[in-house]
Image (cartoon, rainbow, N blue to C red):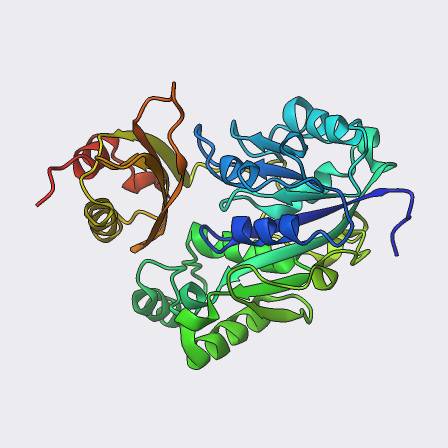
Length: 348
């Protein structure tokens, strides 16, 4: 068990759109007596998740306890961003009882765990546990290779070849680093899909891991907080594709921010995003839009061709009514000009 004098930190990792922010919102609203703080690490220059969480802040997790880092992976900017952020949260009065860290959907969790070995914080912080949030439908569909059948055919033809895509490595590293896996969207996957997702996770896990089905982020906080895993002390038991490397990068992925004009109907924007996923292999879209004649801002979240949108709050009196979307894809699929044209195409 971890030293009770240390402040516990839970790292919440998971693939793009798996449901990390939804989980943290649930934990914020059900703290069970804990005073929480949250660190959100976005991929790209425009933060979305931090704003979502601040909008549902409560006394046990007030807005000042929610910090957003949107200028790069926190495990790549340890000295500049990560340690000062943790120290600032620890200096709050009253001090948080527990810190939640939501990693970018593209982040490798192990380098972040290594950051907890820094002398400035090791004696005061412990990693209570690593929670991997996994989308059951996506895993069951085998979306970690562009053409799964072709990859398997190549592997069968030449056992010495490794044709894993960057997405598969991200997924495998997240599972390998986890203490618990939360399997989200089980209703979309169905019983057969959930069974397949469980089998894939079991095959990738380096050790037996608890796998819990979760809908809409609802899980008893007692199941995932207070694990006492001291993950920073068991790095060898959490293998990574990048073990032995001096550092890591995210050059396989790229994000671009697209400004969009007011849309006539949310369904029109959803259709454009679905077309992007189909025609440009877009992984993730998230951000805001203005809808003509509507006083509320439209929150947009998309994973591949699955688009969700809802009005989240009124536009501020001095706030420009403009839409901004962060689009994330593998490096070779990003074409800012084409993306801007597609997202701003006339309805019809």
